[in-house]
Length: 373
Ligand code: FES
Ligand SMILES: [Fe+2]
Image (cartoon, rainbow, N blue to C red; front, side, top):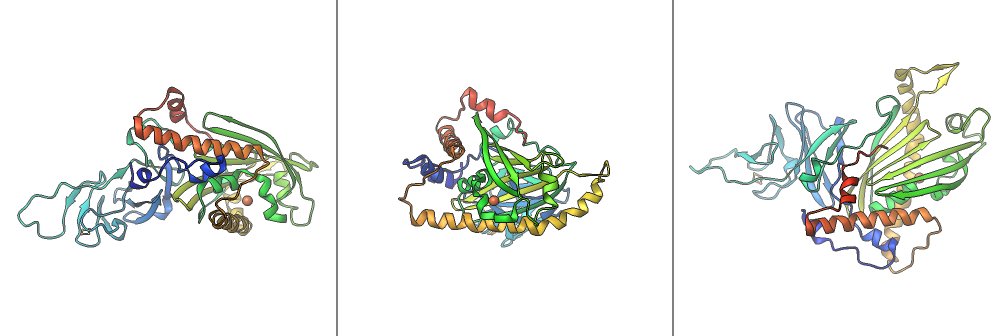
C-alpha cells in the first residue's frame, strides 16, 4: 500500500462524472514503466505511479527491475545513482540494493557494525512487447494476473511512442474512446460522419462499435485505401475495447491503436501507444514486413499532429475542470457513462480490497482473465 493510495479518500460523491474525476486507478494490474529500448544494460531511469516515485534499471545480466525511487538513508532518489552488476547504487554514500530491494553494501566505513537491515520496495517486473511492465498493487495478485495480449504486435508494422499529458486518467480514456471528439481533428482524420452503433459493458470490459463515412477530400487518397471497407466503399468502422486498464481501437480490421495508461499522479497521465498497421496487398501480394516497416516513419508527422491536438485539448479540459469544479458535466453519449461507471467501480473495489484483503468470486475471475486487445 502506498502513501498516495492510503491518503486518497473514496470518491467524494456527487455526479458519476465527478466521482470518476476523483477516482484513482486500481494498482492491481500490470502497468507500463518504460519502453525496453529506453533502458540499456546498466541504465536507470525514473517514473511515477499515482504519486509514488519509481526507479527502473537494467542489470548487467539484461534483467530489468522496478524499485521504489527513494534511498532509505537520506531519501534522495536512487535513480540519480548507478547500476553495478545487478544492483542499484545510491549516488550519495553508495548504499547498494539488490534486485529484491535489500541493502547489500555501503561504499564507506561500516564502523565495525553489521549492515543495517533496510530495504526499498521492489515491484514485480516483467518485459514483453518491448515494454517494461510492473505491478504496483498487492504482489500476491501479481502472481495470478496475466499480462495483456496484443494481437498482431509481432506481425504488423508499428509506430511506438509515449506521451505525457497533464490531465486525469478518466479524461484520457474519454478522449481515447469517445469519438464524438473527432471534430477537434478536422480533416486530419479520414472520417466524415461517425455514429456509435453499439456499446456494451461486461465485467471489466467495454466494447464499442463506431461506424464512419470516409472523407472524400484531397487529404485522404492514401489513408482512405486503408480505412474503407472494400473497393469502392465509402464506409469504415472502428471496433474499440476498453478492458480495464487497457484500451485498443481496430479500424477496418487493418489499423490498430493500442494504448496503455500510466497514471503518474492525479493530474498527469503517460500513455504508451502502439500504432499497428497490417501490411497492405499490392498487385495481389502482401508487401513484405521489412519493406512495410520502412513506411512507418512517414506516418509519424500525421500521428504527432493528431496527438498534439488531443493533448492540447485534454490539458485545457483539466485546467477548466478545476476552475469550474461546481459546474455540471452534461453528456449525451451513453457510452461515457459506462467508462465512468467502470473507473469508479474499479477504484472502489481497490479500496474495499485494502480494507478486507479479499475479492469477490466475480472480481477474482476478472482479475485472472487474460485481456486480449
Ligand atoms: S542518501 Fe543514499 S546512500 Fe546516503
Ligand atoms: Fe483524438
